[in-house]
Length: 125
Image (cartoon, rainbow, N blue to C red; front, side, top):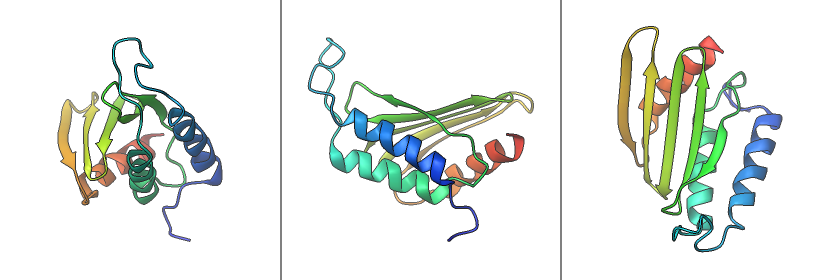
């Protein structure tokens, strides 16, 4: 097991919530929202598996109207939002209100900048 592998509780919770999103049908929000594709869900889970640490708080899991999945953390003056639109098509926003710093970036297959944000979130948790 990797040193920064997420706990079983984290992965079980998030996997259950992401799988629940796969049941959403077209127009689930009554405004024409797209359903979540299995490939998008798989990429989202794989991405989190590669950056989460043992002590990283469990994110909120939210569907997006374009058929994507958003993971959110809002804790200890830190905000991290990761939106996965599809496989290799994601972006994130991270803000440290204590330091007055923020980062926005896109994600394809290089998770290094997201990993840095998750480390900061974990250290302050």
